[in-house]
Image (cartoon, rainbow, N blue to C red; front, side, top):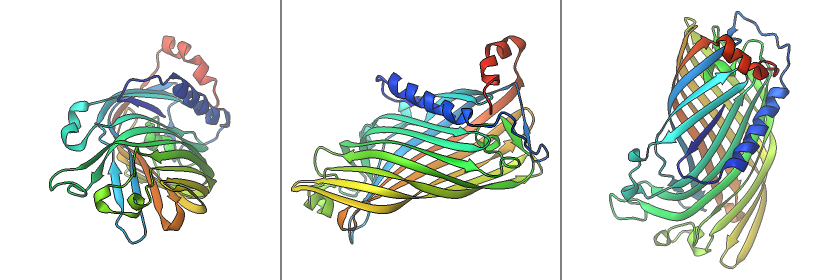
Length: 348
């Protein structure tokens, strides 16, 4: 499932092309003769799924120094409204930000390009991230700012690219697609263990210290204005869908990754490097209604990246997507199936 939400116009063709190519890779790895237990979930070959959705994407930053309360920076992202469609392995969603929902006078302006692709194959679930944010505000209100106001940092930026891939052991009875893509129907409760790996590379930076001067924190005292990180490692988890009276369902999924992390902090007096094992985790949840023709869901996906700096300083990046979706399935007509024949030939 690839969702592209553009809040600022810019040249994104090379990045979109890269994600599109990576999105095809898991599909090619699927078995062309996948046998599932139809008493547990139902598939809809040659059906088109059309959807409308409301979503809220975000990339938040949390900084913590020894003996001090965390600094929590959030972007001022608007809600988005969008449309999408799925046919076989292929899914495309297009969302448009609604700037009227963002109070820029109070929270400042965020410029962002948020690319999240969550690919749900039968035997693999793959996540791709491309996060490019500039402009954050500090929460809660009144922290480093007058009462009732937010401390704003227009210069604070985060850049992150990453990917994860997890194998679904019980794909015969458990379907990720039923919950997240609405092109299958989980009719009986089932779950599956997950095993895979992840990698991330990125940076956090500001034109000056990333901490407000009025807080006199360690980040400010040392003049830490930039952090680079790279993480890679294996992970494991579990996913389960509870079904009530065939139509109502709740899906929960979690993975934990024990990544080897390389962190470099740029200080006023030089640089400090740290190598550690940093646990990261991804959580997913969906609640909804499913039947032969319609599906309605409320879903949430969040990835938590943790990087350790020197002297027990911590940096966290939380990337997520909250979405409300209404989808309808219908049999594709002969002409449409002819145009989409190439997708039918891709093993899923």
